[in-house]
Image 1 (cartoon, rainbow, N blue to C red):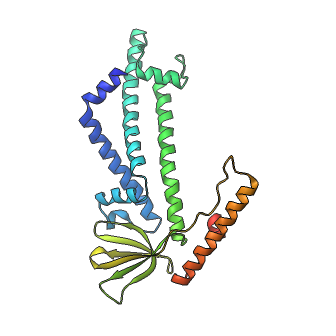
Image 2: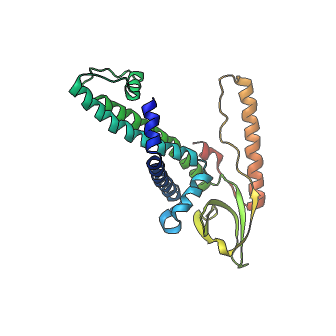
Image 3: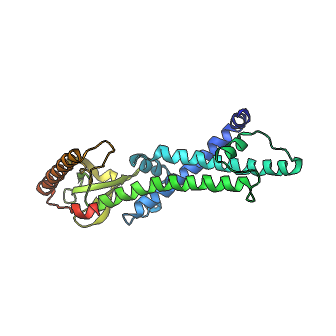
Length: 255
């Protein structure tokens, strides 16, 4: 354990630099995927610094940074693991290192035909894939909900009185532009921030689509919660129709 922390201390600058590089790459990849849902190319309209803002707005900035650190840990385990295996094959001894403790934790036998490091590489790779899916899937759901009209509405006023955007959803913002979604026309629009004079909220975010069924929730309680949710959905739809003359399909969203 001490050797592990000594390694971090000795290569602190390198680890931080690598984590920032990987973290930036993950933010860029996420922003590109998120914008692609709306038919936009992130790299044309935004910068690398904007990708941090997109990740922050979607609540995944910290998870992406942890993914970057785990990626560095994967490289460390693979590189040290292969060296340890070479040494054990040469000397016939197995040192009680942190890596060997990890092997024992995952119950990887010493007489396995597959190298233990290869098994650990597969395990950690699967963990990274699971984390990536845990970040990607909620983002896809959020983007689809925004496209289907289940999102807050804003009025965006510009310097030109003839060009205003009423009852639109905001996809994201960049250093010089605001990306909005016109649900009425089902198209994205890019507005220069220099031309915007005011952005005001018309209606807040939509209620949830389904009532989660908790372990301690009885059938009667679940029915009450479902009735309250249906009432909230109806009130939100009425407000949306009144203020924006727009309608949404709740049944389609549940599917």
